[in-house]
Image 1 (spheres, helix red, strand yellow):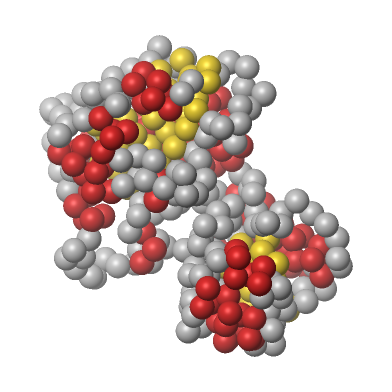
Image 2 (cartoon, helix red, strand yellow):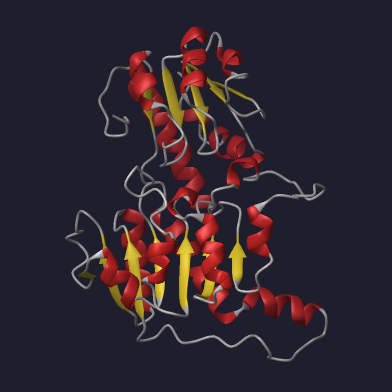
Length: 328
């Protein structure tokens, strides 16, 4: 089986090549360019392509892959909202993903963001580098005995629940499906979660009914001085409404590993560019906002699990074996 990897970074190549000897049936070529309509034809002669969450795999791209003879799209991530699934089915292309590479990696990053914006560590770091050892503007609050509201209690959300419990927090959650393993979690309505939580962390997929879940109306239902963290999908939060809420001093802090405008930014060095109309730049202008570049997954353990599951997916497809990672 021949696979063409798009948008390959050095750490992607390293993680896949470290286990490639275990999969002699699979031949991999790597591209730095990302998958998009104009680059789909580069996959001619390959059985499969491997893409990431930032790739453009909408209708035109999928049809281009069909013309190139591709039969399989491998997502080396859990998310697949950037894939035109109906078009893939129409074209007879299977889509497979990595649903659970390291839930703890993302959950730990979510808590790191919450701690950073709470205790103003990003500001403290800059102050001390300038020999300013004063404590002005660095006041935080204890998480102990506060309420953590977790939106979505799948594997990552469940890991975040356990972390918050370890901090001595009361943990409440909202999800369509309750996780039976979380016997210490109190499930509530979304409105109850918004009004009761001191920390709100988003861990749900991006779908039609969760798009812009956080908006002007839901922000108004939150406690004053709440901390909001999003390590799931940027489209869960309506950015212009979030900025309005920050300016209205609704939030004590906001930590974002994902954001609506990230497609052109994620994993790229744009330090020499002027982002004149960027809402990301507007968010970064606020002292109580911390943004990272979609790095919640970025641990050695997670990359190893992603590589192994992706190649197992490819092998199962090639040999006609069923597995639960097919996106339907």
